[in-house]
Length: 79
Image (cartoon, rainbow, N blue to C red; front, side):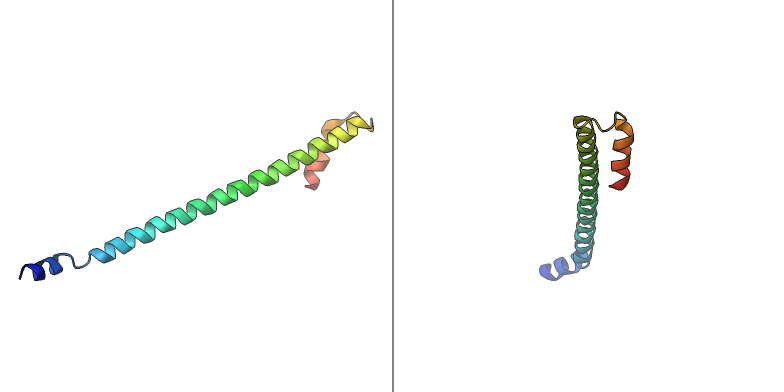
């Protein structure tokens, strides 16, 4: 008799537990996806700034032009 009462009281708890687990995994997946997008954007920005600084350094080294801002902007536009 006592076990039958426990079974009736716990009926439906699995659906709430399943819903909670699905929500938690969905939030974790979205968080990981967003962090990956942030790291990709950071790497692309880093590569573009590295290319611009190398172009300016090469320009200054060989005295091609003293307009470094123009050269950096051209390299950033290309990348």
